[in-house]
Length: 370
Image (cartoon, rainbow, N blue to C red):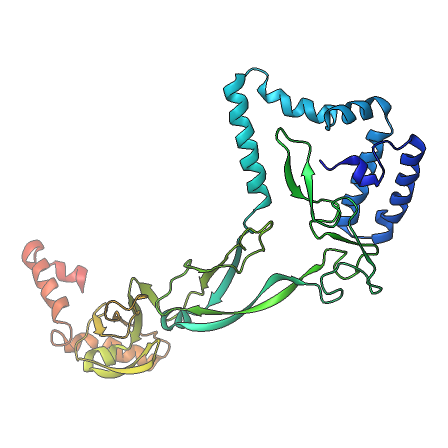
């Protein structure tokens, strides 16, 4: 709590008429309507009104003059120690001092940014520019908080020091002056751009380095890129969370990549050199004759790099999916109807399975399995 006499700019011996006259002058000078949108102006007006309400009440003023603190504030301070004894009182004193010191030296809040990446970008790594809000000196007033005329005056509450003695406390301490917000000077007419704060939010461009082998949900920390601290506290940090878009071709499995490759019955039966997608581009791979659906092939060293680069890059596993043809013409149907003529040479596994069924269940099983 600041010194109410200092807030109104009057001596402690001031008469009620002098107090009233000082209040009217300051209330008109710092009325929020004169500085629309300025939170600082609203806080100054509140402090002026509080000071006048106390000093215009003779009973409250006498108590304040005697003890240097408002009666209600003293009751609030003393209440917690009523049943705690001397030891509890001392502990609370130091706890309050620590709390006040910590409050005036606050670390800025952290920020979070979700960065969208393609699958390839997360695997191979990329540098991306992002825009994040940051606090900077107001370009309209140069940080003074004043309007174009630049009219500022030394704060009469702290006498231009930016600090006041804290009276609403068990042990007096020095705190940031709430009337000038620690700036030592006051803008008579607030800058319309920053509303008297002297600072504004601007977009800052940061280059984010996404390392190779990054994963969805991974957080990248940028120290000091969060919200600014107060009272000398360090700035907060920026956490960039990676949001990797699912890919229709690739599926990650640790440091390996899985690809499902559809091929025709002809290519599976006769063999073929096929085109396989990788995050580095297209590669050619040989499918041997007689390849069954579900067969996996390994392409070494085309998978996911390790983030710390301590191990060799992972692999790509290509799973062959033999596609059943869609029969749409009579000609295709006639060709497939002749297919049994070529057994058992074309379907040896099917023929072996039928032989096993016949051995166990009899010759009539042929009518069931064809």
